[in-house]
Amino acid sequence: MEPRTPSRRTFLSLSMGLPLGAALAACGSSGPSRPGGGAASGGGAKATYWYLSGMPQEGVRTAAVDRFNQANPTGQIAGTTFQNDAYKTKIKTALGAGQAPTLIWGWGGGTLRSYVQAGQVEDLTPWFGQNAAVKDRLFPSSFGAATIDGKIYAMPCETVQPIVLFYNKKAFEQIGAQPPQTWGDIMDLVPKFTAKGIAPFSLGGQSRWTNMMWLEFLFDRIAGPEVFQAVFDGQKDAWSHPAALDALAKTQELIKAGGFIKGFSSITADSNADQALLYTGKAAMMLHGSWTYGMMSADGGDFVPGGSLGFMNFPPVDGGKGDPSNTVGNPGQYLSISAKASPEQKEIAKRFFATGVLADAEAKQWVDTGAVPIVKSAEGLLAASKDAAWLQFVYGVASNAKSFAQSWDQALSPTAAEVLLDNIAKLFQLSISPQQFATNMNAVIGK
Image (cartoon, rainbow, N blue to C red; front, side, top):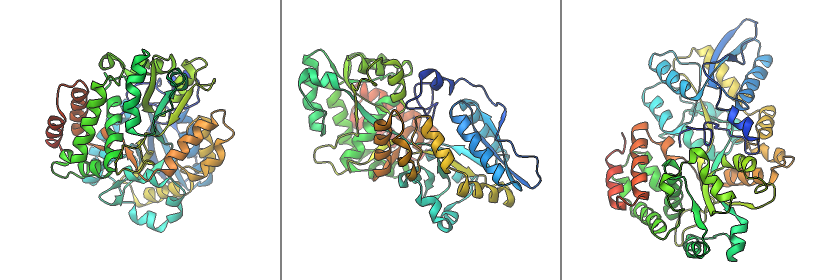
């Protein structure tokens, strides 16, 4: 799910308990902006680092660079910040021209694969082999989107953002039911809610990527991560796997049964209307990113502080092979090293990985913004937050996941991702069949 608006991963580390005004500020700055974490005036080699602007995330990133520079006067990092969309354009151009910064901030997955295929980033596998302690302190699940063809090309960093099944406790009280424990429970709940005039699920379907979350979980719960991994690896006709067709069919069964709010295909997630349907009681459940917690807390009146919001991992599918601990979403953000950097610059970058990235002070800053950093030691920092129960839930999901799959539209190439989103919209509008969806997607595997 590419970051597009203030309501989703433009934040990338969206404050889960932050006031909405502060959260919106994360998207409001323009770039390139002032240098962040500028190098000290001392001599020695200097590495360069480009990263996203916007508070509070920019402040955490800049502080990490400043601390590193203070501790390493002869090996400095000069940081420059860019607004989200400007960064994407700038980094692509710089890489193509062989003028990329030493440290390349990114989302991993399909974009990282394109860097690897072009020989633009350093293979970090040997370094991680020699620095096992660095890898061991991070969530194991964060390395999936950093790994291409079995080799690690990026250092996972920053925060984790799983997709969560939210529910309105009062809506369940109205029908005298409990949250679903299986896919069968979900289907059984649909007529019970609709009979009370409550939509079972809210969905901002016009945004397309919101629909994708359903497929991501159903693919996993039915077959585990192997089916989409085959797509990511470019295996011929991977979308036609029986488990994939089953997941697509189950999605349309839910739609036909009236599982989603009427008119969902004209509702945008960008307006946060899907969240409002949940906290106003017009819908009972919503499958959405963890970044929506802060917005519901800010906009939903007493809904969150009053204890009416429930949250859980997606339930298993009856007879499915997928591990119920698995999740999907954003397993982290990522730092790569430019293959064009000098040996001195590469050494500075690796020192930053070992001693600067997600050091204790940075981890605490992320928690203070209401986010969960991808470092195992963060668990001890969460209890003091006013959103402790929520943060501990997110930490548990991320740290215990056997598999943390990256959002499909980030994992795939830009070309395949756009075809995917277009076909998902058609699937949810019931204008194509599961088989037609598979055929259309098979045509862009590896593109």
